[in-house]
Length: 238
Image (cartoon, rainbow, N blue to C red; front, side, top):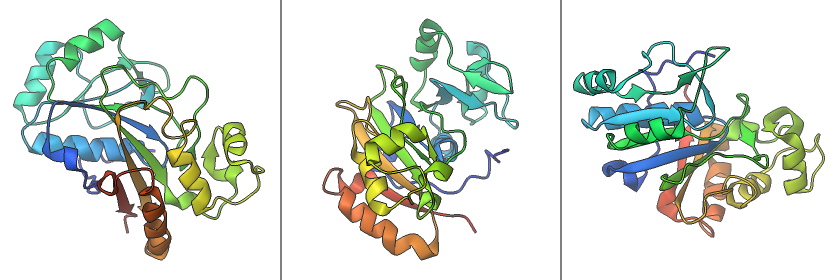
């Protein structure tokens, strides 16, 4: 799947977007990459020094040159762009830099956006024992879920299906419901895994017009566990 990294328009309206000096980890499924790049584009337009990277694996962007040293990093920022860093692997993917090297880059940036989870392009995920990978310096975590998983069999829409069925106490062919998404988003074994004391935000992504009432119902329910201003509904394009 190719993403047009310079033409991503959907941006959650979160209070921290007006700030800087954050290290933001994005977990879950159903739009982590598009959320990350929309935020990177927004911050870069504000004139901030922005780094996009991963603590696991992400697809190497086809439009954006990979920054390989500090000189290239400064040049990208001087041009008003955001920088993508990572170590190239097989299958056109990037993985996390060695930790000590990563820390040198982090000290230079105003905003760091980290894709900290993988989901094989499915809209929903329950993490395995060693996921997500949130670095100690991260102060914000965003949990993403794609609402296109609603009313579909868990086995078709949820990555780590065994973890999902265990958490939800359902069978693989049972349909995904609003209550199921709620459980995944608020559980310390779901989207909030390894969040600890960090600020936690939720993106209800790819909401269709037909799903808006259900999305609002879900957001209202989430307010029992998460601040209202920390929840965003992002409408599906088209």
